[in-house]
Image (tube, rainbow, N blue to C red; front, side, top):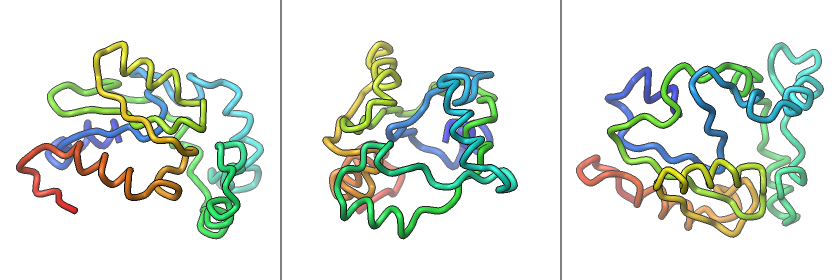
Length: 155
């Protein structure tokens, strides 16, 4: 999303980091969490740069219904999404930015703390990493609230 803002700024009115890595320019997600490159290497063995879906339990999913839904709908992820360094500013200026922290998954607590340290807003949801599955209405409300007035974003 940060890279999209740098490439097509006219199409991005706000940035919402949903339980996400926030690398600095020149850093990748693997730089932030070095052991993650080994996980992706295992998940992508023979997959042409695509990693099998991560284990839902490892991402804090403890609800059997959510886990089942995720297993049925999960698809491979390009390894490059975590491997490529961020080309531009970590948090571009000039537009609203916020972080949504999913409290039942600890991996992004430091990123949320970094937002707070910069005086940027952090919202919290009591859920696992997949808020769109476990708390869709609450997440939708947060996303709609993040959209600046006049953008035409409505429910």
